[in-house]
Length: 520
Image (cartoon, rainbow, N blue to C red; front, side):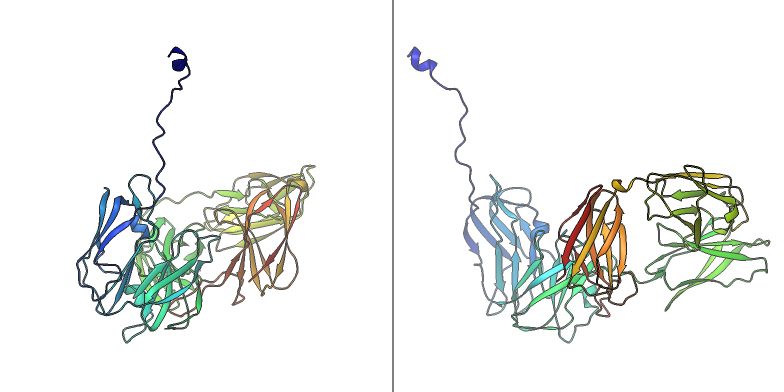
C-alpha cells in the first residue's frame, strides 16, 4: 500500500472532450420554405442552448423590412430562437432572413453556419439569383461590408430612388471577400447598385457613403456575373455662412468643389479698398482679406459656383489682426527632389530676392529660383542640392511683404541633405497599361508620398525614397486632366478606375527595387 501510494500522480480532471459541434435545429414553426406564409412569429428550436453574437452586423433581411423584427434571445441563452415580425409583408413575395454566423452555442461558441430562413407570401418560392463582386477601389483590401441591392424597374422607378427607398432585394459581401450572391429573386428587370454605408439603412447619403452600379438594367433570369466598382461622390457645392475672423479677414466656408467658386463684393466701397483671397490648407474655406482707408459697418457678398448662387452680409466689428509670422517646410532634413516652401499667416504680396541669402556649408552662395502660389499663400524655393551637405536660408527684414505692408524680421532656416546611400530607389515596369496614368506611392494610412503623371510606355522611376513601406496605386486618367475624378450616380458616370499593386513595397536604404505590375 505504501509503495502504491508513493507512485500516485497528482492532477486535475481533464474536463472531458471539448464540444466542437454546432447546434442542431430540431424544429421550425412555420417550416423553412413555407409558402402562403401568414404568421407573425417564427420559432426555431435547437438541441442545446444558443445565443446571438453580432446579429446587427450579420443579419440580412431581403427584401428589407421598414420595421425590424424582434429577435430573441438577446443577451441570454435559450433553446428557442424567436423572430417576431413587426411589419406587414408584401404580397406574392419571397423573404429570406440570413443569419450569417450569428447563432452560436452557449458553451463553446460554435456557430450554426450561415443559417437562412426562407418563406413566401405567395404560392411558390422565388429561386433566381444574381452574383458578382463589389469592390471599393479606393481600398487596397476589403475594409467593411458592402451592401449589394436590386431595385425593381417598374413605373415607380427613377435614379433618385436610392436616396429615398429601400431596395427590393439585398445581400452583402463579407469582410474577407468581395463576392456577393443575391438569392430568392423573382423574374423581372432590375437596377443593380452597391453601397458601403455608415448607417446600414440601404439608402444613399452623398458624401458619407460609397456607391457603385451596373450601367445597364438587368433582366432575370441571367447567367452573367457582374463587377461593381464603388466610389465616393464629391459633395454638391454648398456655401456656408460667411464670418469675420479678424479686423480685415473674413472666412467663406463651403462643401463640395471649390474650382468654380467666386466671391463677389456687391457693397459700394471707395477707391482705396483692396482685397485678396487665399485658401485654407486644412479645411474647405476661402479667406477674404481686405483693406481700406474707410471703415465699414458691414459688407455684402454674392458667392457663386456654376448654378449655385448665395448672398451674405457680414457685420464688422473690431477684432485685432495678427502680426506676420513665417514658417518653412520641410524642416531640418530636405530631400534632393524637395523644394523649400515658406508659408505665412497673412497673405504675401512681394518677395525681394536681393534680401534673401542661401549658402552651403562652406558659406558659398547657392543659386535659387522661386515661385509664388497666391491662392495657397506660399513661396516655393528651388535649388540644386548635393549629398551630405548643409545649407542656411536667411531672409533679412523686407524680404517678404504682406498684404498690409508689414515686413518680416530676420529669418534663418537650417537644412541638411542625407547621403545617396541613405535612400532607396524604385523602378516600376507596367504591362497592359492604358495611358495616361497617375502613379502614386502611399503609406499605410493612404497619404500620398510620391506621385508621377505618366503618358507613355516606359519605366517609371521614383528616386531617393526614404526607407519604409509603401503601397502602389495606379489611377486611369480617363479625361486626361491630371487628377482623380470621382463618379456621379445621377449622371450614371463612374469614378476613374484605381488599381492596387497586391504587395507592400519594402524600400531599403542603398537598394534599387524593380517590380513588374501587370494590369487586368
